[in-house]
Image (tube, rainbow, N blue to C red):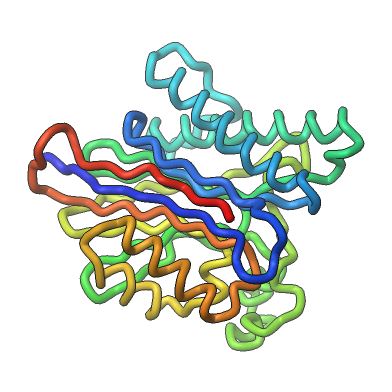
Length: 270
């Protein structure tokens, strides 16, 4: 069975923030999908997240043409595709870090990132920070990434409960992100996908506003990925919209569609 996909992405500033420091990418030509959440305040966070997306897209584009050298060690536990994805993120990290060091206006800027590459019937996932990837399959929703944040690490160590983490005033403290140090550890995984699967990439402006169950219900409630993104952002804003909100939806299908695929690539920043 040959898998196809429908995909869409939207980004919104939310109800509280003056600007939008998130960046998204829907690149069906590369089978690449990305959400990056900028850090650093003023315009620096927006610059960092855009650098992350642009550098990664450029790297993956060159990789597709062949001959690109891997950055860092090769992780034997995951696919070559996942390793190339990690290399692109590590390159983006270096670009952001060195740019911040050379420009005082960009000091301490950084970005989270979650990115996936779809190849045949396998999804390769890479991330750093607290932007997330979810798999919605049937009635189930599974978080595919572990947050790199202070409260998430405390929960994993059993120091605080998940309920306390949800109300912690330190939930936005990130323990890993692009631009923080010259070297970056990137979490990698591969996932077999099948007809009917829906993959969501999102910034914490979405996951902090909606429960997993609400996200799953909305994601399964519409056949058009653009409608899913619109509804997710609408509901996150209705719940407070305290941060920028970004969502990228990938709907996996085993059915052949007219043309190559029907794809959406529309981002709104407001």
